[in-house]
Length: 191
Image 1: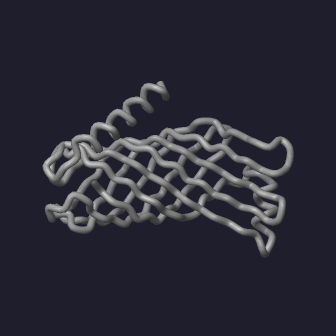
Image 2: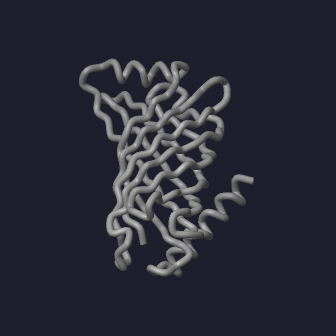
């Protein structure tokens, strides 16, 4: 099931890039962001120890690629993939997390302006890499939701590439009472 969904999303993305223009049924968006990942209280003790230290280093990056099906002016159907990585380290100790998810949902443009809201169903997983043994931990797949607010600049203009900024909140329960929360601010372009 996951492989079929992945193949479907990749096919939509490739088709949208191939046939993208201002009058297209498909539009593609790519964005880069940063934010914060919040794991529940059953998270790793190694991560908590590093976060309590005063001079740890941290880089948080998120990458999102999605395809919009333009079924009407105010309403779009979206399919996409995103990854959100949290790199945390101090000296030789590290705890790196890579969260990846597929999502599908609807995007609404109220008043046909650049402001839009979306709600999506999310299927995702997370892998953690850390310096203590064992070196890797995979969290189970889970499903949840993603809420987004975005502003598309030049929405009503005839440009091929249009910038956008936005924020999203993603919530994914992982089983065994583990929950992941991600808050992200991003900027990107729409083709």
